[in-house]
Image 1 (spheres, protein in one colour):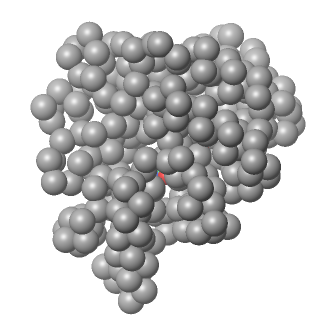
Image 2: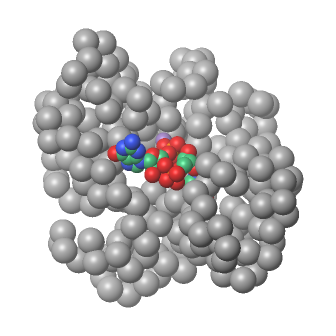
Image 3: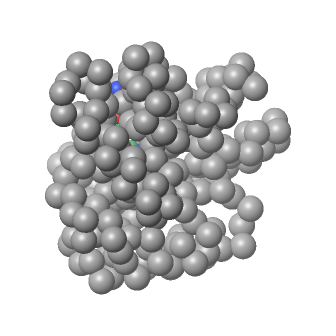
Length: 250
Ligand code: G
Ligand code: G
Ligand code: NA
Ligand code: MN
């Protein structure tokens, strides 16, 4: 509880920063987009990962301010990528709490509508379950202003085909729990292959998260997976290290 009360101060003091993890297009072998992940460089505790403060921020009511800061920071960093000639869409994680928050959605739409920033959102299906009608309305508003939505951690939570059927999403991210043992498990390849086929039938791109080995990448390629993300390709990197990665790959 003490930690999350420090968030407003931390934001003002510039202790938060974003890391970027590339998502690579398998067939084209080029970077397609990146996922933005927030980190907190705390003056006494050192580096704190979002697992330690996001759910507390949701409970404390500071997730809206935190997420707006993240989006603005990503827009800022993306402009630096663009100045170097790299036009890279960046996906920001959005908590379920915020999908029910009309004020948040209005502020985000005001920020992004008519802007040249290429921001997408990653949401989990669990996020939609709280109040599906409102969440779907808000997701449609994002779609209407050209903000792509990716379904995150697919298969790991309370996945329901009833939600998949309705969500206006253009990308499905298969949870890393099905990928990290892809080539040593009997069932994971069956689940992954059928999920890829299902997503393609619904005209969605598929990302595999947690790709850690060349063998997994090779199998995903055969299965027709569109995008890969994971330690094999790159860990999440700070802005300058990410830019160096992008320049190296170009
Ligand atoms: O690298 P990693 O520890 O960052 O991510 C842990 C979890 O934190 C992931 O589930 C990720 O989606 C979430 N996360 C990372 N950054 C953000 C953020 O800016 N907002 C929200 N809501 N979740 C985030
Ligand atoms: O819930 P979400 O998918 O947003 O969480 C992403 C989390 O997965 C982050 O903590 C990120 O650092 C981590 N991650 C990214 N790539 C890999 C990987 O290849 N293997 C593992 N185990 N974790 C990864
Ligand atoms: Na995510
Ligand atoms: Mn995920």
